[in-house]
Length: 85
Image (cartoon, rainbow, N blue to C red; front, side, top):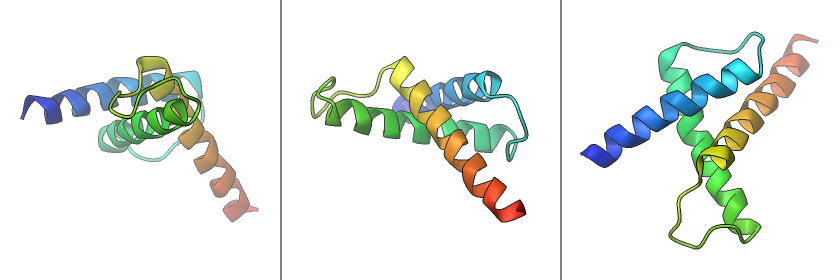
């Protein structure tokens, strides 16, 4: 159970920092921010393993998680801009 709470807390922190680093209009509140951080950690881990920085059972570090969350925000904005144009 603590592992799940750890993911939630880590996701909330990473998602909030990603939103602070990329100011602008983004969707959602706390839940979306938390999910953004968790998904960012997953994407960061995938990218880190693809580049050979992490082993098969290693989780993403803080900076790769932040990179993944920022990448997700950037992709969201690209899709959202195309919808409004």
